[in-house]
Image 1: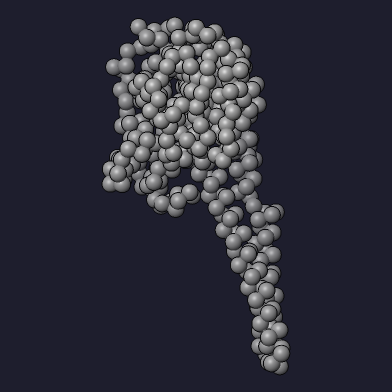
Image 2: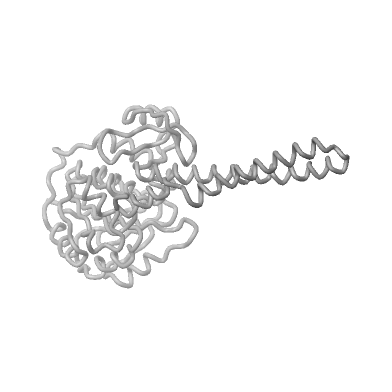
Amino acid sequence: MVGHDIIVIGTSAGGLKALGAILGTLSADIDAVFFIVQHLAADKPSILPQILTDVSSLPASHPSDGEPIQTRRIYVAPPDYHLLVNQGSMRVVRGPQENRFRPAIDTLFRSAARAYGTRVVGVVLTGYLDDGTVGLQAIKKRGGVAIVQDPNEAEYPSMAKSALRYVKVDYCLPLAEIPDLLVELSKEPAAKEDAYPVTEEIEIESKIAEQQMNTQEFLESVEAIGTRTTYTCPECNGSIWQIGKEDPLRFRCHTGHSFTASVFLAEQTQNLENALWSAVRTMEEKVTFSRQMAEKMRSYNLTSAVTKYEDHAMNLDKEASLIRDIILNGFATKRTIAAIEEDQPE
């Protein structure tokens, strides 16, 4: 029987050190293939494959779209592209962002679960917020194995804590113990997939990431797995559906953007701040223009008009200062987001 030979790893902040600790001690004869997503800046080239090749006994690379999967290799998602796993090959696509990221961990994990079921091992390492949690849930639904780095040693524990909160994790280990476990799992026969069918949710969301549907098919598919809400997408202002009934609460829009509740709240907060700054800018422009008009009326000796424009400018200036003060000093929602990201009570 085939072992647990499809290993997907997701990490964010602090991930380079964690990846090095795991991949740097693996034996070159491990009968498995590794797929990695680390959150990276979209506009900068990645040298992560070169770094991992230097520290690991396995070669690492950014795969191309449609490239066949080879065992005993490390495949790293390139910046600004999702890495998806199909039977025998990979997709590298610019599908919609999930949790503000492309590449996204959930996208990789979900696709691997869909393609390889019980053979998949999902590993969530250090990082902010909760990308990887929903992907681990998909892996567990398909009979795979879930591993999480011990948050007590993680440089940024939020991703690990989220996974432990919402997923029935098989192993929670320090980095030093994960490589040996991966070798053991690669030799351990995976269960038959019959008992773990691909759910409608996993199938549809995998297709969304690959952008395999036209507009009508997409809307019908999202309706099938979600419930329409009154919210709008913070990325594109499109309609939003709540997906499923499981925790964590999550949403997907009509173009494919996906958010867990904490990320959705963070996006709403940022949009609110942007709107308030826009209001301040517009009001300050009106203040300047009203004062200009007051000077113009003064040149015509129109005293009442001068008073009108000066009073208008003074009142707008006060209102703009109030909004500025809210942004800079009284933005309670920003403190809420900070507490969520640090996983601390307020």
